[in-house]
Image (cartoon, rainbow, N blue to C red; front, side, top):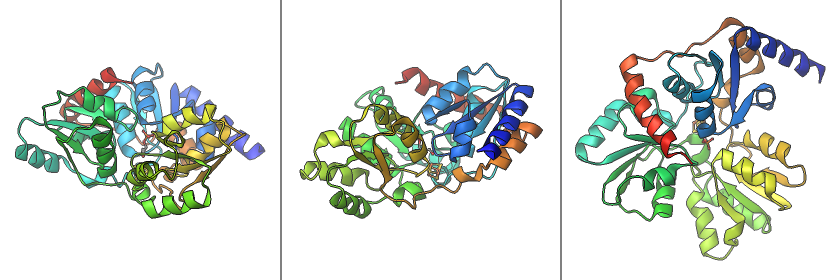
Length: 317
Ligand code: 13P
Ligand code: SF4
């Protein structure tokens, strides 16, 4: 409506004046996604941050994502519209925890999901996201032990798809995705037996989804374990009448905008990340107008973290 357009104009004008590009994660509020220059998953946004020509990156997402942008673009200004937008998963491990874990497993390669602080990334060998985790694992010699952190469900998923049993998994979890559990999924599948399933590998139900396939309850071709970017790509080409989506509910905005012929429904409609939702329209406008809040990193931490993130980007996908 007119209120949205007026606000969007103000945001775009302020962004131009500041030579800023606006990046938004798929879980952001619909208004934020609509005004952003680019919307994507963690990996796509990291890549955009690394190659953006603008002098300022306004990151509509959570703290670790803005930090990752800063790690990759130390010469640019990176703004996070709400500095308190954290991540319950990133909070499950500290740099001291990683150092202690490494001491128990000398010689192991340390793989960190991007949902970690810069200080944690600095202690690791290579990062991964939900879209390239298996490729990153495959880039490590088969006989080398791996410490995978911090998400237990993504860790279990990569163990399964790579077939490796020398991966030790940190027992962290995201409170939002852990709540999308096996019981909820089984109930929804029983009520919608013909629907396709898109399941984010951080979900508590990621293993149950594969059991449903193994038990013959749902045909394998109807179950897709995907990153949020992978879900958007799959939504473009699906011919399914209905898709049940197991991830944070902000994703539904993207999926519905991409494909109006398919009905997209959440597996758990209460799966909302309050941190992602802290980026409100008013806060974004203030951020681009006033240049707040700037992300800063200790140089040595940034340098060590950069090696790990850049190694991931080289492996790519
Ligand atoms: P992706 O967008 O990379 O799938 O990550 C999901 C997530 O939970 C980020 O917080
Ligand atoms: Fe972190 Fe979970 Fe929120 Fe993603 S959805 S930002 S993993 S708390």
